[in-house]
Length: 205
Figure 1 (tube, rainbow, N blue to C red):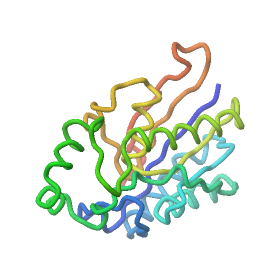
Figure 2 (tube, one colour):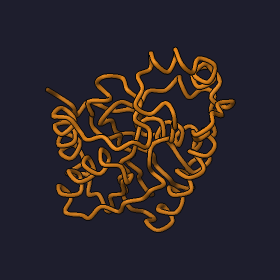
Figure 3 (tube, helix red, strand yellow):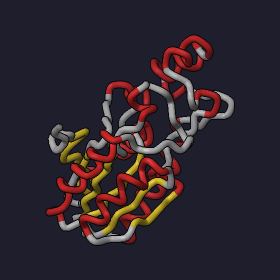
């Protein structure tokens, strides 16, 4: 059985201020660095075999803590980056709702129809993310794999892997420094089972 640990990066100042990051590079804040350390401690005894990360700084900084604790190197993949949101990046949610009300309505209420110039669609995100997941699972059969990525990308990937309609996207939460664990095994119906979703019990301040 192959076990996949999907980890969202720790908090940044933009997370704290509800600003959209997308593909822009932002660093972990003090709280985010502590969260990354707690994730690493949580995974320390899991006997992780491989650590993969988005190429964005906030994900790599989180992955570095996990890799150091497991005495592993980071495999950096562009495919695990956050959804690209073009003109929304750097804006608060309130600013987006004010300036891009029509597109934001689709994003919130019917993600399958979200198609904004300069941004990725949810289909594009899931295609690149899940393509990379399929590849690393093929390369790491019966191993334990950590992938450090981003909230929207992880949600979209889990929804796609489970065969759920993407319009349920906003019914899910993926918090900073959370861990979602998926089991891949042919004995399961469809080959995959969610063992845990958005687990943050390891984060204590």
